[in-house]
Image (cartoon, rainbow, N blue to C red):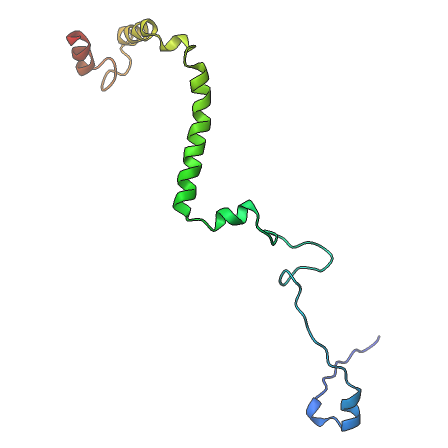
Amino acid sequence: TTHHTTTTIDCRRLTEPAKANMVKVWYEPPPYGPGTSLNRPAYGARSGNSLVQQLSRRPQGMLIGGACAAFACIAYIPIMVREKNLPFTLSPEYQAAQRAYMRYHNMNPIFGISSKEARAADEAH
């Protein structure tokens, strides 16, 4: 078996000729931080002025409000297109028949359509 030993050199005890032969090593960290390499790109946002970096610098309240407004506009498009062709279950006749069916079968008798308050409100109309 081979026995490996490590030696440390104390620069203060070296003689002048030995010091002259030593090479000074300069450490330069990788350009994208520790754990990255020179031969592959960095992880995360690249340097530059990308849209993600611009948005990350904006106030959060404005971004959240803008995103909610954009999603609401996108969600309204199908409603706007189908507004004339509503499902038949939303017609007043169908809903009246549904209420009558639920009342006949005594569905939700405590707080719902078959409760005393709901029956009284329906008779008042």
